[in-house]
Amino acid sequence: MKINKHYMDIEETYLFSEVAERVRKFMAENHGAALIKMGIGDVTRPLCPAAVEALIKASEEMGTAEGFHGYGPEQGYEFLRGEISDYYDRNSGVNLFSDEIFVSDGAKSDLGNILDIFDVDNVVAVTDPVYPVYVDTNVMAGRKIVKLSATSDNAFLPMPFPGLEADIIYLCSPNNPTGAAYDRQRLQIWVDYANEHGSVILFDAAYESFISDPDVPRSIYEIEGSRSCAIEFCSFSKTAGFTGVRCGYTIVPAGLVRDGVQLRKMWLRRQTTKFNGVSYPVQRAAAACLKDAGHKQIMENIAYYKENARIMAETFEELKWPFTGGKNSPYLWVRCPGGMKSWAFFDDLLSRANVICTPGSGFGECGEGYVRFTSFNTRDNTIEAMKRIREIFT
Ligand code: PLP
Image (cartoon, rainbow, N blue to C red; front, side):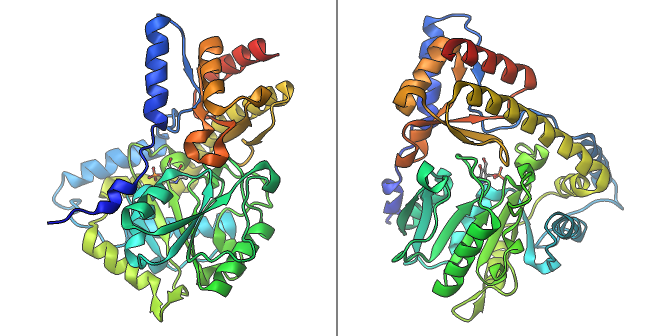
């Protein structure tokens, strides 16, 4: 018996355990310090009333002979795929066929699982800094990874360069951790690159609902030629507070063909072999969030986080700390003041302001000298954290 040795190649990310350890040590020495976590990646707003109502109603249905639902349709219930399709139409002017939409238990699973349909010899391009899932899932399989530097020189939006040979390209827009988002022009260049090279773009749109800039596409399918080169991943986690409920969806367009095979068919085969779908109550709740009343409610929560982001941006502007993000994204990627390194600034902020951020170096080499703040905390905590930062650093 042999194990998959590629697992030994996965770099231990000490990021969140190291953050927890430093916070624990600080608290042991400073009993009673009122910490504010401004690095959290989870949401704080509760589920919207429409989702809760749908969960209760669907659960009650499940307790009746007439309303019981066992295994559902392979790609998700038609009522949810119909809502997703209408949402794309309304939101991006994109028309999707129902059989291009695959409902899942979240974007993270699909982002990893999609690799089942690609050969291990493909070269993978990821940005640096990066959402670590893209790297680790490919290291597990033994694929070669090339890194595309996201720096202030390219507005944290890496572009194809002469000589780049990438078969699989991960683009996350709006980006975690930088908060930067590709505009139409830049995304078109990537789509053209992928079509010319026969590459596939894995487009992570988990934060699309935070976009307010009309030049930033909410879906890669707004870009001409994308249906023959891109798979899109989306999630109800940040859009509707489903981090603990679990629901997402992946779009594999019918026109995406490689080696003469429709990737949609391969993904269907993969999912029907290894996945048995998302529960009926959860799909009802997700559908409720896309209907008029529910959508209005989830957008009120997004507006709440976006106002937090605005308050944070205002503070960083006042302090003249260069940052990106916060406008189309819940993330603000902030240059550490005084040329400090990520961990040094983390420690400084923790000890002097009792505010916790996430060191950018944990997301890749290019993240050194930056920290990530998120707008997912409560309004009161956000205001208090910014007040402390202003008082200390002004
Ligand atoms: N993609 C990005 C960029 C994320 O930041 C996250 C969650 O933090 C996910 C995907 C995972 O989302 P889900 O909760 O749907 O698995």
